[in-house]
Length: 71
Image: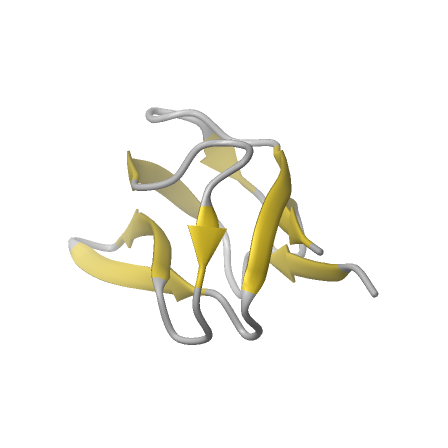
Protein backbone atom coordinates (compact mmCIF):
# COMPACT_ATOMS: atom_id res chain seq x y z
CA UNK A 1 0.00 0.00 0.00
CA UNK A 2 1.32 3.42 -0.94
CA UNK A 3 1.17 6.26 1.57
CA UNK A 4 1.12 9.81 0.16
CA UNK A 5 2.76 12.54 2.21
CA UNK A 6 1.40 16.03 1.50
CA UNK A 7 2.07 19.57 2.72
CA UNK A 8 -0.17 20.65 5.60
CA UNK A 9 0.27 24.32 4.67
CA UNK A 10 1.82 26.57 2.04
CA UNK A 11 5.57 26.67 2.69
CA UNK A 12 9.07 26.73 1.23
CA UNK A 13 11.17 23.55 1.14
CA UNK A 14 14.14 24.36 3.35
CA UNK A 15 15.87 20.97 3.49
CA UNK A 16 15.27 17.53 1.94
CA UNK A 17 16.63 14.68 4.08
CA UNK A 18 15.81 11.62 1.93
CA UNK A 19 16.10 10.49 -1.69
CA UNK A 20 14.03 8.10 -3.78
CA UNK A 21 14.89 4.60 -2.61
CA UNK A 22 15.58 5.64 1.00
CA UNK A 23 14.32 3.27 3.69
CA UNK A 24 12.39 5.13 6.40
CA UNK A 25 10.77 4.23 9.69
CA UNK A 26 7.50 5.69 10.94
CA UNK A 27 8.32 9.09 12.44
CA UNK A 28 11.50 9.68 10.41
CA UNK A 29 11.80 13.24 9.08
CA UNK A 30 11.67 13.38 5.27
CA UNK A 31 12.03 17.12 4.82
CA UNK A 32 11.88 20.42 6.66
CA UNK A 33 9.57 23.15 5.43
CA UNK A 34 9.77 26.83 6.33
CA UNK A 35 6.78 29.10 6.74
CA UNK A 36 6.65 32.45 8.53
CA UNK A 37 10.16 31.89 9.96
CA UNK A 38 9.09 28.56 11.50
CA UNK A 39 10.65 25.21 10.63
CA UNK A 40 8.08 22.47 10.10
CA UNK A 41 9.30 18.86 9.91
CA UNK A 42 7.54 16.51 7.50
CA UNK A 43 7.57 13.02 9.00
CA UNK A 44 6.89 9.59 7.52
CA UNK A 45 3.60 8.24 8.80
CA UNK A 46 4.55 4.63 8.02
CA UNK A 47 7.72 2.61 7.55
CA UNK A 48 8.79 1.70 4.02
CA UNK A 49 10.70 2.87 0.98
CA UNK A 50 10.45 6.35 -0.53
CA UNK A 51 9.23 5.46 -4.03
CA UNK A 52 8.53 9.00 -5.23
CA UNK A 53 9.99 12.33 -4.12
CA UNK A 54 8.45 15.40 -5.76
CA UNK A 55 10.28 18.25 -3.99
CA UNK A 56 13.67 19.94 -4.09
CA UNK A 57 15.25 22.42 -1.71
CA UNK A 58 13.98 25.92 -2.51
CA UNK A 59 10.63 24.77 -3.95
CA UNK A 60 7.48 26.67 -2.95
CA UNK A 61 4.60 24.36 -2.02
CA UNK A 62 0.89 25.01 -1.86
CA UNK A 63 -1.21 23.44 0.88
CA UNK A 64 -1.96 19.83 -0.09
CA UNK A 65 0.98 19.52 -2.52
CA UNK A 66 2.43 16.02 -2.83
CA UNK A 67 5.82 15.73 -1.12
CA UNK A 68 6.55 12.01 -1.31
CA UNK A 69 5.10 8.52 -1.62
CA UNK A 70 6.15 5.66 0.66
CA UNK A 71 5.48 2.00 -0.14
